[in-house]
Image 1: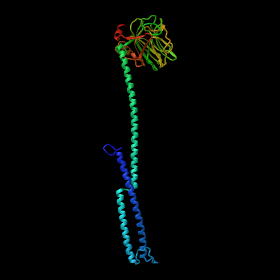
Image 2: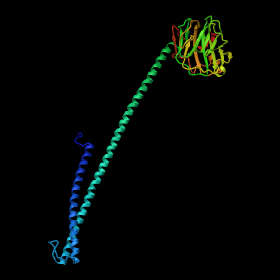
Image 3: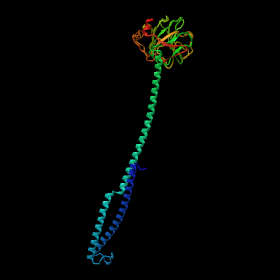
Image 4: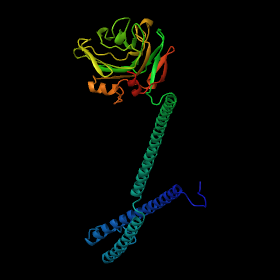
Amino acid sequence: MPMQGGALSPEEELRAAVLQLRETVVQQKETLGAQREAIRELTGKLARCEGLAGGKARGTGATGKDTMGDLPRDPGHVVEQLSRSLQTLKDRLESLEHQLRANMSNAGLPGDFREVLQRRLGELERQLLRKVAELEDEKSLLHNETSAHRQKTESTLNALLQRVTELERGNSAFKSPDAFKVSLPLRTNYLYGKIKKTLPELYAFTICLWLRSSASPGIGTPFSYAVPGQANEIVLIEWGNNPIELLINDKVAQLPLFVSDGKWHHICVTWTTRDGMWEAFQDGEKLGTGENLAPWHPIKPGGVLILGQEQDTVGGRFDATQAFVGELSQFNIWDRVLRAQEIVNIANCSTNMPGNIIPWVDNNVDVFGGASKWPVETCEERLLDL
């Protein structure tokens, strides 16, 4: 379609130029053909004339026959006339050659020109196709990147929105994500809390928590960790009139802890698979240590961590007589044995050190069966309660 204002588009100009060049090439071919035909005719005549002149001059024409009826029989005249004819033919031949050179210099070699033009057009077409392919690839890549970026952005926004919602919900009840406690007021088999995260494989650990209980006899089970095939992988329990016990892989160590006075107490237990070494701390003071508690046994991963109940199967079959009655807070787990001074600093409120495996945060603890979450007293207030 012609462009607005009568101007031709670049494509139409190129097409017109190609057609004009094609017509010029055809005309030059015809001219060259005619000139070549004239050259061949004159060359033939020249050859015949030169042959005849040579024969007459040498007297070889024995029969005296006139091979060119328009030539005189006198040898001198024949030579002179043939010389003039030869000169005329040479002049015409030179003129034709000059004209041919001029035509060829002006028009170029038609075959070569056509070949160069076709090669150039083919190259331009290939470049155009490559550019189109590149643009298509860039378009597809841009679309994919845009889709991936949009999905990533939406995912990030959703995560931020969820986090803001959680913070708003947490802030509505607690001053900070860890400023809460779990209340388990009755000895039943249906009140409990559940830690959402699970444990990795552990070769050592430290578990610390604040608890308050006046239950009798025994405070019950502050926490238990069960895995498939072993319901007592890690358990802290005070059952009946027995002392508080730490169970690792169903092996038992009795701990010299006394916490059933209705006051807040900070409890820490450490353990390492190396020789089964264990330690027990109450309110920052080491009260007991021992060894050979499930030595060389790694804590199995992927189990269920329950607050307030002892598990007979993974995540269930609670026994009301073993239930914890009281309040729990700041339940943290580390994958190493904390130094004694670190435990002292946590217990006396000089350090706030969340567990690197299980930290005490609101959105990691669910409560069931009537258990509830409440704002917890400050660490300093808990210390005053000792």
